[in-house]
Amino acid sequence: MSDTAKKPRRKVAQKKTTKSAASAQAVVKNIVSAAVAGADVTNAQLIARRNAAVARGVASAAPIYAQYAENAELWDVEGNRYIDFVGGIGVLNTGHRHPKVIAAAKAQEDHYTHTSFQVVPYGPYIELAEKLNALAPGDAPKKTLLVTTGAEAVENAVKIARAATGRPGVIAFTGGYHGRTLLTLGMTGKVSPYKKGVGPFPADVFRAPFPSVRDGITVEDAITGLKNLFLTDAEPSRVAAIIIEPVLGEGGYTPVPFEMMHQLREICDQHGILLIADEVQAGFGRTGTWFAIEHSGVVPDLITVAKSMAGGYPLAGVIGRADVMDAMEPGGLGGTYGGNPVACAAALAAIEAIEDEGLLARSTAMGETLKARFAEIGARSAPYRFWDIRGLGAMIAVEFVTDFDSAKPDADFTKRVIAHALKRGLLLLSCGMHGNAVRVMVPLTASDAVVEEGLSIFEAAVQAALAEEA
Image (cartoon, rainbow, N blue to C red):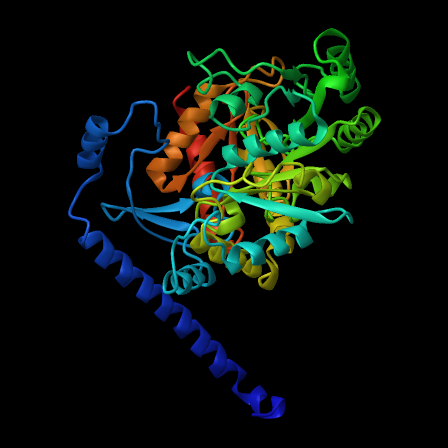
């Protein structure tokens, strides 16, 4: 049909679109109803079973159990609906069960699910490595290692850096989070709850200060602290790598000042140290670029990736300069499940979805909306309690304090906001050294209507938390 012929039917087409959307919603509702009906169990029953069967150290933020999820919405086993502003801790930039991701994974399952790349290799691993090498910043030739978890990626990045430089030392930063294995815990700069009672930690891991407006630590102070570390504990000629999250994750969603990132690059070049960007949480579009470090213009030597790379499937990796990545002898890298073919297929589809659906631009626009709306909510509902609203792209945090004069972190208020949000159907998660910030990781595919609904619930939760203080 020609464009001319279409014009008179525009109103009819709009009605059809509306009916189609309503039909799609009805389908989802029916699926949810069927899924919940098939659950035949309550949250309380599962909590009791969990307490009897699961190790106490495995914590869960919400006392509900998932039954069905779609894009940015989740239903528990009792049929309660929640808007998801957590996204599996930053894993679901493309949303729950993205159609392309699910289709790609199912198609791969029809061929094979596991051979171990170390035994019989396969194409999806190579195809994903090629894609990641092309996406990573910098003009130098690159290579990729695929593993299963973010912590595993970080450990391998350190191992590669040590092999490439012949040096043992690693420098991390206050507030950084790099994993819960023993080596990565040594690098993680936050004690509670991760590091309690499980030391000693590996040697040759050092800590440098991170800039903090609250604590009066400037970029200059942080760099001076790093240089003092060179004088007191970490001789530069023995340091293999400096690792940093371009945006702190557990540490509070605080972006690294670009000035500091440039100075770190210069220091690394001066001393022959490798710069590792830990992009496990900040990568794959969350900040409006493929990798958060791209905002600074700095090119790292190695990048660790995981979380949203595979749209919900367990997959992680290390991307780096080819000469550095090839430092290990054959057999020195890998793992039984590393680069699982189903997860690789899912990752390729997730990356395609980010590209085809313009999710990088969506992240930037969503971040601007979130910051503006949080500022409005703070001014209207809780003056002098929203200490900071920060982040890059849609990687946003709101930090709560008791008052602006003292700027005392208010973790209790934060917990109450999260609890009231959950009661009203919004999933939130805290972060920060003091546990007084709420972080937002809503899927980039979430509709404006769902995001706005979540923000309205957030404001109601803030108001309810304040009312408890009266």
